[in-house]
Amino acid sequence: MLANQLATDNQLTRQSIFTALSISDNYVRLADEVNAVFWQEQVQSLLSTQDDIGMLIEASIILAKQQQTLGLYLTATKTLIHVIDLVSAQNFYNVEASLRIQLSHNFKTAEQYVNAEQELEKAYKLAVKSRNQQQQLMAIVNLIDVYIIQSKYDDALPLLKAAERLERFFTSAKDQRAFALVKAQVLAGTSQYSQALIILDKINTDDILAPPEKQKIAIDILTLKSKWLMLSGAKQPSILAFEQLLTKSLTYQQHTSNLKLDFVMANYQHDLEQAKQDVIQQKSLTEEVKQQNLALAERLSNFKVLLLLSFVALIAGGYFIYKRLQPKRTEFQFIDPITGAHNHSYFVKHVNRLMQNDMPFSLVMFDVDNMRMINQKLGHELGDRLLTQIVERLGVRLGSNKLLVRLSGDRFIVIAKNFSLNQAFALAEILRKELNSNKFYVDNLGINLSASFGVTCHYENKTIDSMKDEVQDALNKAKTKGGNITQVVGFC
Image: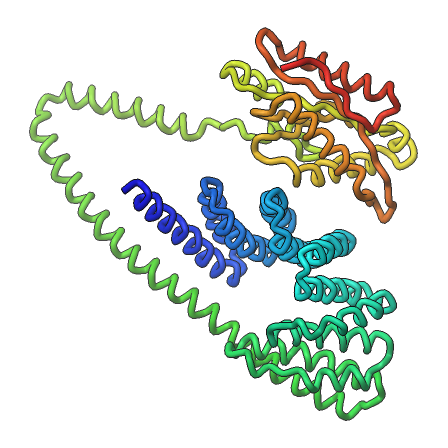
């Protein structure tokens, strides 16, 4: 009986998740970010209660694509990295490779090409480990595409030859079409226009049933064709291809506009019906209140009583207006204005709350090695931008139970709820290696960073000041030993 109930509950949750994703997708297509994000947050809330890793992966991939379309690249990155961490722990090499290819699309769209290349290289190694030739091929094709965007055609040529050796492992017309397009672009990029045009003419779209998708691909092909014909000196065919491109583009835009109009009209009709129902309900309530007031007026014949009630109502109304107009403190008082991390006031408030509730937690303090020298060399304004990039990069690795706080200058502290001392040490090492992994870029200047870390944990009779002193001592020891290491103080 219990098993049947759990199965039913899981099915209902799955339906709720994918219904919310479908609604969000409609708003994404209308470029309505506010409503799309609202429904995406509903999805994330439902997913947070799930332990079905298959559903998590499926829903997260769809969710990340929507976030990417809206230009929310950092949010999409967090969505994918969360699932990648879960999958990596299970050694699901094929799934992790697919997710890293998806993550590379996000980085590519955000013009973070170095990150995109790194994810595709990781995906290729995972595909080799699992002996999945199709995934190896997809990783290579996507890496070629990243090189094409950067006009690195010489780097793409050897990859193209590797892809041709694996071409027989394509299983769908869509993948074959994607490979043909990148192959043609690499050849055109190396001035082999005639061979590139031959490949374009052979691209088949018969498998595509949806007219808008087929029109979009035709537009992409005609765009390349008209450009390459002109570069190869075939002026008249180029003009003809351009005229075809204009016709296709106008047809596609008209179809897209009709889709948006249909959706808006459907929403308008729904809102209109809802408004009619609200008016009817409001009239009914108004009539009911009117009758109640008449009955009350009959009973309150004594003028003094009426006066007293009016006075009470006036006071109550004034108090209500006062409460509504009283300015509320916003969350911005707890945010560092330079980096966007939490500030020292938030640290004190949050740690005191954890202590009052006897919640276990640990602290990880760090600061950037040689930050003073960086400020002297680049100036404090660029130094502040560098600190902002540090917060953004580490924020990807931190969840709701790991809060990043800027204490002062380049000194930060992470509040890790429900973390033991050993777990906090492992977290510090992850963050330290994350800072070391890739250069930071400020005004096209690449900067290698390292940081020193100190770790301590909370146990009975500790105060907030004693914990800060302990973790500061650990950080000082790390600095004394040359920096770029993690030191632990205390026991739990």
